[in-house]
Image 1: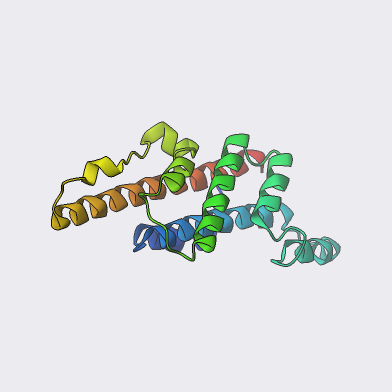
Image 2: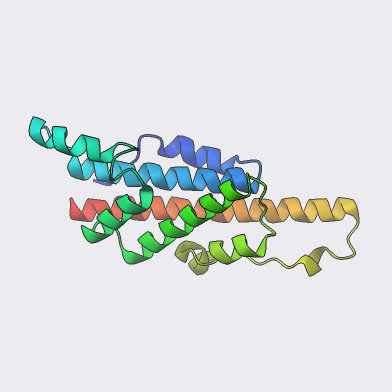
Amino acid sequence: MPIHSSHEAELLEALAESNDAGECLLCAYDALEDMVDALLQNIFQKDDYAVKFVVDPLLTSDGPLGEIMIRAKLLLGLGVLSKETYDDIEIFVTLKEWVKVQEGQVDFCDENILFELNRVHAIKQTMPIEFSSDLVVGLSDEMKEMFLMRHFQKVRSTIVLAVTSLIQNLGRENALTS
C-alpha cells in the first residue's frame, strides 16, 4: 500500500494556487519535505516504547534527522529512495534556499532557477522549461505582461506535475520496500 503524507492534498493544492515563483518553490519544497517525513515515520513507526523513546527524538525538527537532506540521505542509504529521487529533492532544497536568500523575490525568468528546474528528472522527461528574454522584446506592456503570466502558469504547472510525480514515486518506492 503506497504511503501518503498527512497534508499531501493541501500542499499540492497550495502549490497549484501559488501566486508567485517564490511561493511556488516553497510549496514544492514543503510537499516533498512532508512526504520524506511520512516515509521516515512509516519506517520507524513502532509500538515498542523503547524504540519510540529512542527514535522519536531523532526525528524532531531539531534532532539529528531534522534536516530534509539528512533524512533523504538516510532513506537513500536504506534503499527507500532512488538516487534520481534523491537528486530531485536536493534540487528543490537548493531552490528553497535560493528563495530564502533572495527574500522571496525570485521569478521564473531567472536563468539560474530555470537551470535548476530543468535538472529535475520529471521535468527533463516531460516538459523542459524554456525562456529567453528575447521573446518579450518589442512586445507592448500588456502583451509582455500576458506572456509572462502565461510563462509563470506553465512553469507552475510543470512544477506541480514534477512534484506530484516525485511524491507518487516516493510512495511507490516505499510500498515496494515495506
